[in-house]
Length: 185
Image 1 (tube, rainbow, N blue to C red):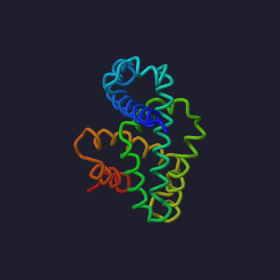
Image 2 (tube, rainbow, N blue to C red):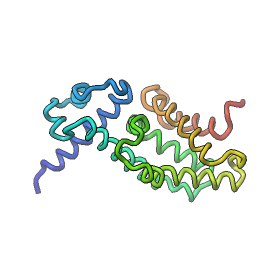
Image 3 (cartoon, helix red, strand yellow):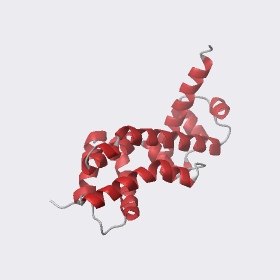
């Protein structure tokens, strides 16, 4: 078996990681040259793996969706109380760092919306519905509204977890506490 595919997979993953970071930091103004430089590869190598910016964004979105869905499934949200499930969910999102932010900012890229809803939205909505039914979460706020508010909180928390110096665990505690209890002392 040739080592080239393994090395190629590793290089593609490294490029996607660099792309997520650069796109999160610089937004739409990030160029393919910026991404190649951050990944430590030449532009020709970058274009060999991702012939267009759109192909790079599509691969980044697919990788982010896969990683997020795997982390959510591994969190086993339905096996623990709602507050712990919310902490696990938050940790899953924050653990993906800049990939999640790049995914959000691109609107999910080429990934069909119904797939995003099924793989990410459904588990979160199910958790929020369970929380409302058990009285852990407010029942007077529709789960879809809770999801939108939670997503905004997570998007704001990602930089704190990765580059802000708080780390994933401390940011998870802060974000989960804020979502469950508000900013009330």
